Length: 368
Image (cartoon, rainbow, N blue to C red; front, side, top):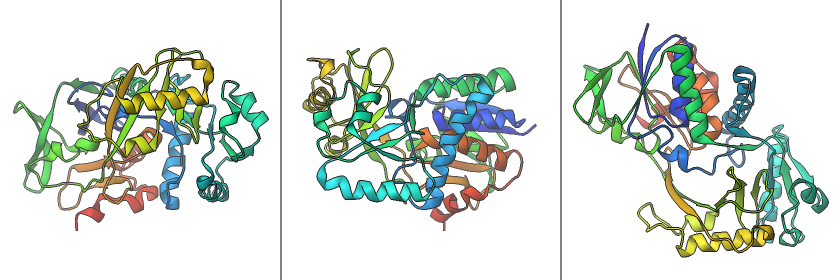
């Protein structure tokens, strides 16, 4: 039985570990902090295939959406995934781009509908329709959102209970262990060595930190993501909404998660954070405009993350040239794609089957 190490216990690492173990590998997951303790747990977690050209990359995202839905047959229930689609409208300056995106998605067979304000009210009665004005409203009924930590825990629990995988939190990987041009395991920050026939790096934004001396660095183009959480509020919001005022989704127990791209652009990872910061209070004011029923609420919590994006903004999934025993699985939109990519990685690593869907996303393009 091949021994495999998966670095990282976020949504990607958990998906890969589950499918590797299901495929018969002896899997050990090494996580520096806790399950979902990295970027996965600080994500808007919208499952979608929006504005993700070229077509093969769009298809990876659609594959992820379908894989999330298919897990219901495998697990009986998927309490970590929430459907309901998404609603979208923007400012007048954004209408032309919105229509182009809508038509592109429709031409690719993606579920998309234009709906009127009455239909918006049926779907989300707490939204103030005045915030829509004359804007066209798009509904994407197959989209949804994920509880990423709940999902990662479910995948790792299944990997352990059903297939004997081991999950070790609090193990910070410092580097690969090399035997000539073969990766033979990893070394922890405490000096401990973990042997393996294959190492799969799912460390996300920390991808290069876990291979600090091996020199196998993947170019990254990270961006900041900032989220604001409300306390429990009087709102029946049931799906992702991306609007001219604020982006929002439910987060359980009556809370809302808020996101706003213009605010992301003003912050850095080392920005001073707190619920009373002006950026957070502005986002909640915006949410009150969209959903007046939430009342005079203030932010309860804020989080900031660095999104793990390869240098050309596309996924990097596959073996790394010039060495054997080392495989990368790093991508933006991991929340959407992780169940699909987990199966792809297992097919390639355990079963020796080349997945054609990954042909345009090989890490080799960065290691000339």
